[in-house]
Amino acid sequence: MPTNGDTIKLDQFLKFMNLASTGGQAKQLVQYGHVEVNGVVETRRGRKLRDGDTVTVDQRTITVDLERLGREANQGQRGTSPAATAGQSPATTTDHPPETAAGDQPTPGTTPPPNLMPRTPDERWEDPDRVARFAEMDPDLRLVELLEQYPRPAGIRVLDLGCAGGRNSVALVEHGCDLMALDASQAMVTKTRERLAQLIGAVEAERRVRLGRMDELSWATDASFDLVVAFGILHEAQDDAEWERSLTEVVRVLRPGGRLLLSTLSPGTIINGEQLAPAAGSRRLHVTPGGVAKCLLEPSALDGEMAVRGLLPVVPTTTVQRDMEDGHRITTKALYSKG
Image (cartoon, rainbow, N blue to C red):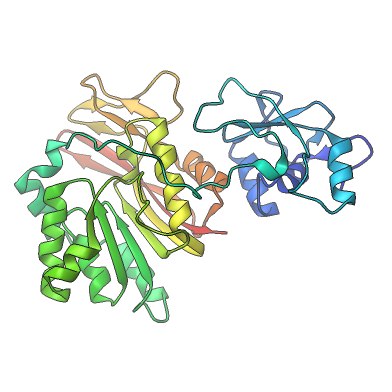
């Protein structure tokens, strides 16, 4: 293992402890401020770590033990014997228990979230006029352009997460994709099935379009999708836990090399004339005075969240602002690939 006497560089430690799978991912984690050393954000990937230093990534904290790291490397037992002792940081939650050994680190997405209760339906998404508006929208231009990059789009397996009225599901089926679609709104699911039935029949449309939550994809096997499409859905997470579960599930069902195409609202968005302000105790959750809650992240923070999970940008992540009668919406648009 690469050490220099009594130190090891931060990026090398991240890779050795499986906190980053590649040097590029380690660089992203540090660059976007998702790594803390001794409780302080560290932006130098060459930072030299010593015995007793603590490294925290995505609410997981590991204490540096160079002697054990060296012994593990020399014995060729990486991932099978304890290489570090864990210390619980103030940010640790029950969703992210501290590790006790390098080989005991939980692999994101290997287990579906347990027994989630159905959320009370949001009446906004059951409104017939809203459903009709979504159904009449053209497919997302970025999706159409992405499909053109596949030599043979027919047969690629795609998950349309938050399919709304089928605006993108229809385009995916027309391109011959092996589609599965999901939405938490019964009205949106019904409309999507209705439209797809004209292309693939009612029985197949019902099988392929499911009613369910974005943070509970236990019906899908690991690494089963080439592409996940998530337009305007991830920001609907009502708290950090739902956001974490949703991303964990997306990563789990994506195959290596698979892509995540998304758009999500960003901080600064004004809805119904109300500014979404950061909620205390959360780096993602924003709320309006009227109680509307959404998880919002700046592009760099979103890239960092994805990098933690092994998803790296294919193209630069950007934002666009759209003025509305009741305010404006700032949307982040991104395309990630699973390493």
